[in-house]
Every structure is written in structure tokens, then in C-alpha cells.
Image (cartoon, rainbow, N blue to C red; front, side, top):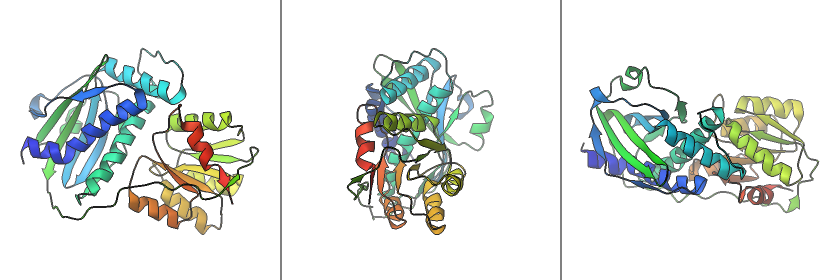
Length: 314
């Protein structure tokens, strides 16, 4: 398969979404250059990367890698937009790593939905952050081709998309999925400000942002969990009055946790959050009884307003 075909079918949605998400989450402007084939034997770089394993039509790894100065600058900008505060980190740290991973999560979620509408069977792992590539052989095992696309960020530097291909097996069809839409909260009664709210997300950055939005709205009785299993346990032990829960998490996904919570007889209102804009997933959560579905990203300039619109009960 030619580099042009692989780029247009697989990487193009990621390139477009990365530039669109970059502008939405940082207000920075990016532009892509032409795709080219990298040499597998010579593939090395310094810096950081957000990666996602790919299986299905393509078996390999998608990497969005940055030189240190670019990663730090974009990470600072994501945090600034999320929290409406000035960030001047000069070294990579957990907060910046989480910010870059959240950006990557948004890109993977939205690109996956776009690819699925063309009936291409792709599966992508949750994005993970890689701090160094000293052991590059680990990532190059079985790799036959590498497609690279440089992205220039105005006033900042460059980052690169790499598609590391082990195998290609396209089986296309003509069916397309419907455009994805979220679910608005159908209720009208405001949630009392003394209510206990459970935040469930494997990203500490997202929990921090949600907590800040809620605090600004007068909600201060907030508890947190970082995966679906913990959420199920906390519903039993803490009896929250309301929940915001991410879909894609580590130990147990939010949609799975929601089914368990309902099976255990709890009718706590749950608003789901996700970067995955998949209409089938939205309908599945709706069938399990949700009070809303929000697509990420949520930012400082509109986050409190969005969250407020969902803080309603029957």
C-alpha cells in the first residue's frame, strides 16, 4: 500500500483532528507538511510521545511525538486553556504529561469515530505517554514501514505523527454511521448545592478541572475515583447524589461501571464524559439510563456553563 493511501485513510483524520484540537484546547495554530516514509533502521528521536496501539485493518502504533521544548510549550498551553491560569513549566512533569495525554485522548476518540463511519475496522488503545525512547527496539519490533507527517505549530516548533506499520489488512465496506451527538439532561430541577458529587476519570487533570467548575458553581461536597471499579465501590460506600463519569478508563470503563451500578439497584443520576464521539456508544449509555452525555474537551471559557446545564434532577 502506498504512503499516500495509508496517509489518506489512516493518518489524515488524526492530522486534521490534532490541528483542530490544538486550536480548541490551546488556541495555537498548526499546519501539516507532506507525508513521507521514514527508514525503520534509522528511526530515532529525542523527546516525548503520546502513543496508541492500532489493531484491525492495520496492526501497529500511532505516535504523536514532540521534541522537549515543543511538548512543554503545548502542555503549558493546554493547562492554561483548561484552568485559565498562566503556566510556565520549563521541565516535563506529571501535570504536563497528563495534559498531553488528554490532548491525545481527544484526537484518538474523535478520529476513531470518523474512521468507523467508513466501515473500516480499527481498534485503538487508550493513549499512553512515553517519556523516553532509549529502548527503541521495543517499539520497532515487527515494524515494516513508518509513515511520518511533520506538524508545524506557529511560534512554538514542530511535532510529528508517525504510523508504525506491522501489517495491513483492509476490508472495506460502504456503510457509514450516523453523525454522533451527545445527550442533553432532560430534567429541569436544579441539583441542590449541598449534594454529594462523585467525579470518575482516570485523568487527574480532568478531575481537577471538573472540581474547579463545580466549586465555582457552589458545589463543594465532591469525591473522586480514577476508574470504573472504584466508582462502583464508592457508589455503595458513599451514596453520591450525582455523578460525572468518563467512558474510557483503565481497570473498568465507565459504560461497564454504569451497567453494574444499575444492576446493583442504584438510580443515582450519571452524566457520561468522553472524547469518543461514537453514536453507538452514546445509545448504549442512554439505554443504561444516563442523565446526559458530554463530549470532551471542556475548557475554562465554557466549562462551568456546560457543567451547570447538566446539574439537573427529576
